[in-house]
Length: 384
Ligand code: M6R
Image (cartoon, rainbow, N blue to C red; front, side, top):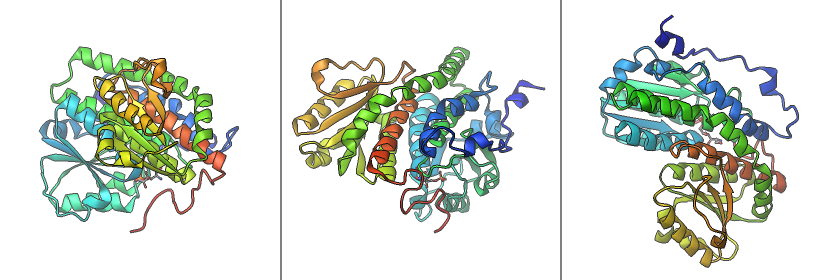
């Protein structure tokens, strides 16, 4: 069997085994699914020896070499995964990438670009808005389409020429957790495949990124072991009515996902802003005791971010920071800091997602909400 064929995706849904659909020793499916992430990420990487477009379908190589941009359409958590992918695709592939909420795109009189690759991302593959956005994209003249879904037999997977099955396994909790991180891994693999096909990935870089990806499952496991620290944070959040989440660049979608998780599961009003936007309005929301969560990698913008956070603290905010292992904080910064294990900076946002999921989970448990079935929500939004 050729290397390419051997590594290409099987689109058959792996059987959902009883272990996936039963709670076991966990109290809720959301908690169980958060802790399944090391396994789900490892499954996503199983059998990968080299980077190949064949992961996405037979015609992927031909299509990847022809396109001049990427358009990602999705809703909710899947939209946040798409927003993170934009940063990877633009910086590693140097292709323009636009990300749009599917329920906006479907009704917009958008200008089509037939040379763009349209990517739809969905856990269920049945989200009415995302399916309608795909139909709209095709109606406008788009021909290159790729779906990234967690359900092999879904409508979305049948409606695109290229497809990729995420390896999260059955996700029962309404709040999506392990699907989000497997979507991120899938989108990073897509970034590598696009880069390789377009001559932007050297053999050394390919080895480097595959090694970094292989470290992710154990780094995720070590991140989840920080749970006791998060439970302590959740005790503060459980008594709050509002919370702000901040991030920059690649970490902004992670902050948005953290805010979505908290509001879905605990019904606390939570909003996410890019750090730099705080001074353009949201700073007015900050008064005594307002919890502010920041996802803060060790990046060149660290000092700028810290200046804004200090300003928020002076106005009464209590700062909860998810940082990289080496983000340079000092004791007198006065923030609560949780550090994720060492990881390449482009991949560390995947780790930052987990403490925010745990924060939402434990806050919801303390508030006594129905964690797996939050009020007014369904697992897949199939109605118009
Ligand atoms: O199945 P999909 O990924 O297309 O669903 C999109 C959103 O409805 C979904 O991500 C929703 O936001 C979740 N409840 C998030 O936890």
